Amino acid sequence: MRKLLLPKMYGSLYVCPTGESPKEQHETAHRLLYSCMQSKGCAEMPSLSRTASGKPYFAEFPEMHFNLSHCDGMAVCLLSSYECGVDVEQCRNMRPKVVQKIFTPDEQEALQTSDNPDFLFTRIWTLKESYVKAIGKGIAYPLHTLNFRLDGNFVFSNRPDAYFWHTTEGNFAISVCILRN
Image (tube, rainbow, N blue to C red):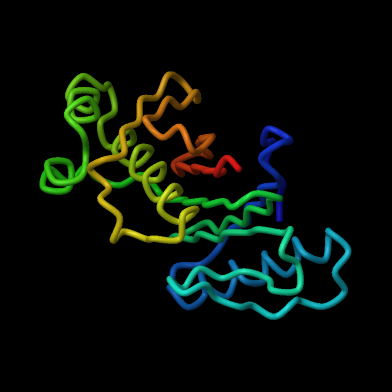
């Protein structure tokens, strides 16, 4: 487990390597959450409850918010005092049908002029995912209404209700969304 540097107001972000099977990735992410809670002073893992839309939370600790994500090779855990979402993805090939359906015209233009459109595709995708996970809607949310522009690791968005942070770890893109109260 390794802690990534994140703006302090956002909370704490932890990463660890994981295996290839979805089951192993899921279990690794939950072990990571348990380790993170131990680092915050919890001797035992609090029980998980779920919102009506299925987003997990700790009923015993309403001031503690968390979100998990995993993919082939990495698991991440975000702990925050605000509603939050996190997504991690290994760089994947840009999918033209997904771009047409889900990416805004500005994002599509950025992909066309990018030196590395596959990685930019992955970075924007993780930003969209982090937002819908933070609001607890999942991909049922109209992703084509979210617009992102990246300038290095700086993220600009059309969502005034959220703060975004993004980084890369080798071939992985990690995005964080914190909802403004």
